Every structure is written in C-alpha cells, then in structure tokens.
Image 1 (cartoon, rainbow, N blue to C red):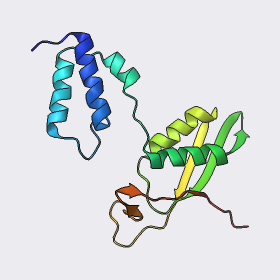
Image 2 (cartoon, one colour; image 1 turned 120 degrees about the vertical axis):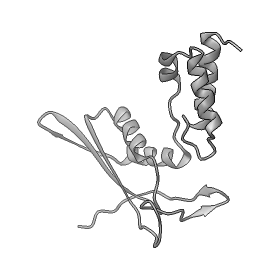
Image 3 (cartoon, rainbow, N blue to C red; image 1 turned 135 degrees about the horizontal axis):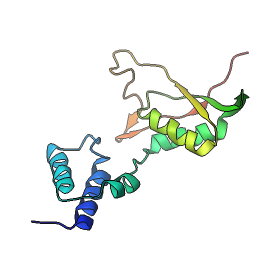
Image 4 (cartoon, one colour; image 1 turned 90 degrees about the vertical axis):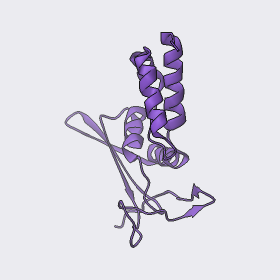
Length: 148
C-alpha cells in the first residue's frame, strides 16, 4: 500500500492524537510501528509539529487555570518573573507542560510554578494514586496559604 503525503500525514496525526504522541498507558508497540511506517510513507514533519500539540488532562487544565488566576509578578532588571504556589491532594504528572503553557499565556519572561502535596507512604515516583475514584483523579487544587 502506498500513501500520498497528505494521507500519511493524516494517519500520523491520528496516531499522535489517539496515543498522546505515544505516551498514553494504552499505547502499544504496534502504534509506534505504524507511526514509523507513516513517516516512511512521507508524512509531513512540519504539519505534524504544527498540529500534534499535546493536550492537557483535566487535572493539568485545573492546575493551569489556578496558576493563571493566582500568579504574582515581579520585574527584576527588566525581566518579568511570574510566581505561583499551589497545593494539591497528591502528585500531578506533567507539570513541565503546564508551566510552559502558563509562561506562554502570562506574557512573563519567567514562570515559576510550585505545587505542594503530601506524599503518601510507600508511593513510587514521588507521588501516589491517592484520591482515585471511578478511574478519575479527585485532586483538589487550592492556592497555598502563606504563613506570616
């Protein structure tokens, strides 16, 4: 089977979308193989880079919203620095992507995002699966209260 560049690109974009760019737990070796095949068939890297943007989970979107609502800015030597400290019920993966999005949306030069949580005993990877119900996370974000 031969594909046109457009067909290969659409196939590659579909694989990126369905697999979270090959990072979802449900991603299989066949997904990666098929993405490689689409690339061999001439999928446009430029189109994929433009359209295969990673999407934020509901949990990450919540962090982004809270970060944008609660950040403070300071200017030092002409550099605008945004800072925000949030708290959560447990570990939230993917905060680097959230921070990059916050930086892009805040018109700051630097964006420092910190999320505090209480680690559970025996949790691996610095966090836990605390607060899971029906497969959905029940993390509740709150603006951290500064102690004075």
